[in-house]
Every structure is written in structure tokens, then in C-alpha cells.
Image 1 (cartoon, rainbow, N blue to C red):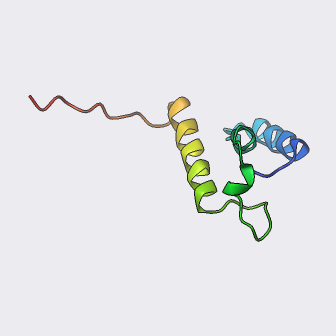
Image 2 (cartoon, rainbow, N blue to C red):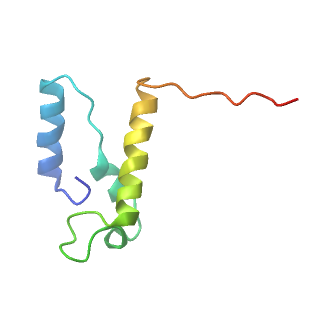
Length: 79
């Protein structure tokens, strides 16, 4: 989870390994943001806001691509 602690991240990663599934590391991505709070809901600063969910979606998409779960379509030259 984006606002998770390192301990929660470690538990999530172990669970992914145990169940042989991909681990999408939102925590690591959110740690690179200069103003992390700008991407979290002011209600609790734990859940993402709309901008934060856009980052989560992009992170999931990149994980899918990087692990070859879907391919990218090459644009054909219209000439």
C-alpha cells in the first residue's frame, strides 16, 4: 500500500512469494515522490487520492508489462 510501513511491505512481499504471485511495490514508488502527501487522501493520509490512484494504476500496468503478462501493440507506419 502506498502509505504502508516497511514492515507491512515486507509482509506483503512474503505473501506474494508464498502464493507465487507478482508483488506490485506501490510503497517503493510512493517513496520516490517529493511530496507524498499530495497523492494521499487528506481524510487519513493512508489511502491514495485521485492523483495517487493514477500512480497506482501506472505502477500495476508497468508491472504487467515488465512481467510479460501482456504485450504492447506496435503502431504500424501508415505510409
